[in-house]
Length: 151
Image 1 (spheres, rainbow, N blue to C red):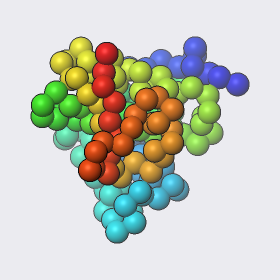
Image 2: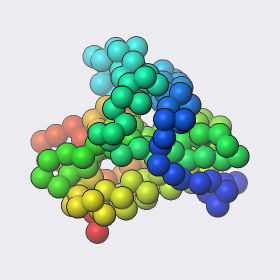
Image 3: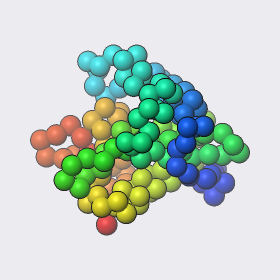
Image 4: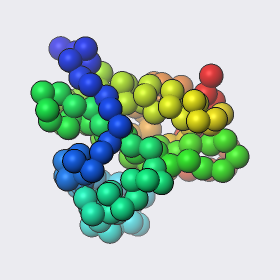
């Protein structure tokens, strides 16, 4: 069952920080990291609710909300040379396969393009490269990340 028509994607606000932190930390603990040399606890500490609030002004963050519950998040950074980077994309496990990740990617790409980005990259630490490849992301030459040209 696809729920995307009932999901609202909106800018992440301070009120979402704790739910976003829990969602990202749980996803990273459950799935592990693409970079096995990195400690999971060190990585998830970067997404504590305090740090999310502190770092929010320098990032583009969007949450997927269903019935007042945060069920997904995408966190972007604006890079140099017209490239934005997806730092995190998480959907609550009970909502996988229901179109929420796709909605978050579409929102992130659209907003990054509106802000002048020409390309979108995906952080090398995101483990699910197959998911991103379904949406046109390809390995960047000589790098451990995926990229896609924005229309």
